[in-house]
Length: 423
Image 1 (tube, rainbow, N blue to C red):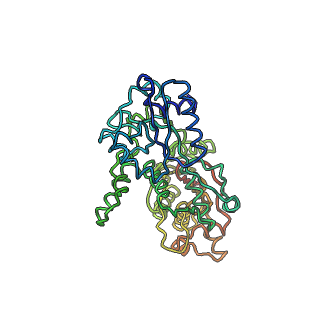
Image 2: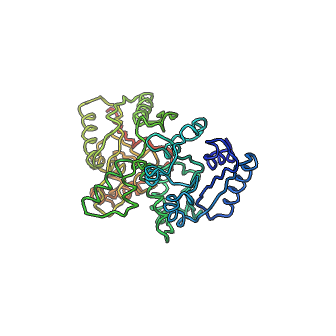
Image 3: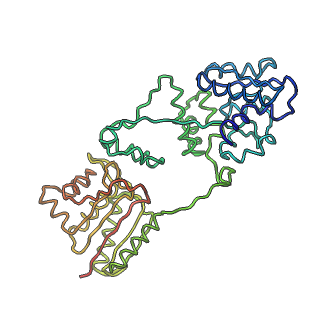
């Protein structure tokens, strides 16, 4: 179904759902003040009228604010009520249905609604019945400064997902560039950004949390905000939702799979791999201390596995930044590990974020060697002081031991490996 055919179906459904009697008048009320759009719809109506003698489809247009203000009154009277009208769906549409203004067109669209996105169709359903049809896709555009992107090392063509977008924001902030500037003189356009994020990412929990905050602090929400919070259409689809009928999800990269791949590489190199877990969490420096204890146990007692071996783990730790440093969970883990090992021979380590950026820095991670602390002292750096200041990036940058991969365009958690050589 091409655009013109679909527009006929969406714009002239009232005429199509009943026999075409002589002098059938169909009024379509559209929200638009764009001359080019008006010309397209008027041409569609003209073509339809020519193909269906006795039917006269006429489009009427109102500017956005005027449309919202006048439509409720127009729906009350027979002489002003349009046969079809533009709608944004949601709570307002449900109220219109409850008032008896909307027709059940489920049977009329049954033959072609499967050609559309189930999510889009469901947006115009009330209690399971179809009361409207989608006819266009809205876009929210971001314009970017090429020179600033280049300065921050961001490539627009690499931003293809929400995670990619967050990664670009992190890079821009790290380069001292304000990531987003929005012209919101009219205020209301800003709601699209927030509502899209809430509905698509937050879902039910975000709405429930928002209402809990309003109750806790006694905040009276505006009618429009309250309507959004109470509108079931604002929630993300749940398992079993018809939106997923034609969807299929396959995991092609996962934390455990990455650890097993690393274990296979270690085995081929003659090291016994031991996977300690793919979801280790906690403060990075505390995890570093624990891992140092395990590495020492291996080196001294051959437990839980004898050397030569590699202790492999994944999962994302956290850094509570209390000092002047910029954090970075993998480098803080490594610096804490190095401090606890205190130059113990035969033990080496690497840790990094698989997306290529550890915290706010465009550094994936770093490596630790038995002489890391000694080399740092020779350069005038105190490892314990830097660790207390959450400034591990400075430590590894000075040693030249940072791991810099650039964006890897994937993310399967952090990766940590501690190698213990035999005597």
